[in-house]
Amino acid sequence: MIGVFHPGTSIVHRASALVKLGLLAAFVTVAALVSSLVWLAAASVVVLLLFVLARVPARVALRQIVPILWVLVFAVPVQVLFGGWEAASVMAVRLVVAVALAALYTLTTPVSETLDAMQAVLRPFRRWVDADRVGLALALTIRCVPLLADLVREVMEARKARGAEGSLLALAVPVIVRALRTAEHLGEALTARGFDD
Image 1 (tube, rainbow, N blue to C red):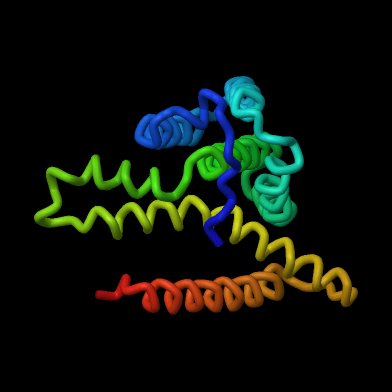
Image 2 (cartoon, rainbow, N blue to C red):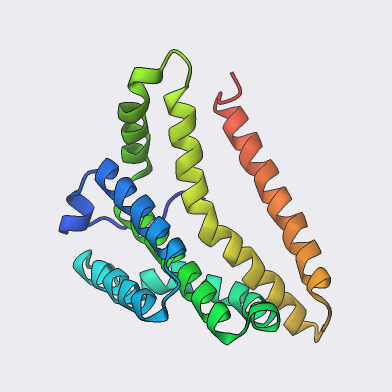
């Protein structure tokens, strides 16, 4: 599940994990607060330039980002129905920007650096907080965003291959079941490595 790190020597790869995490949090927060399509389009251009700066091959980047488009196939029409086209467009761009930035982080930062960054941040609080567990949880969370989108895509492709049409519930149930099964396997793997101690 964690293994999407794409080695490189770009300035993005060499930047500190703490700096990248801080910028990721700030950028996603700003994108969540901004409701102007013009500003969100500008943010999208900045994200694209960051991928170019990181020298991440287009096919590698697209493999991380395209799955979220399957989620938008269902989310956008629902948003259009309840909030209109502008609200749907804002939601879609926000989601794509957030996923793209999370993907860029995982593509340019080894998990070990994320764990080290968490230890550095949480070192003053080690009496109350287990920095290793927090770092691992953060790394898993960032990595699981594209993984969940991939699960949705696989379920949709399976339904399409069977010629099945149905409600949103008919899509949600298999996605939830598969997500829970994946989480259970992940939990077993972590337990086998001693993370339940």
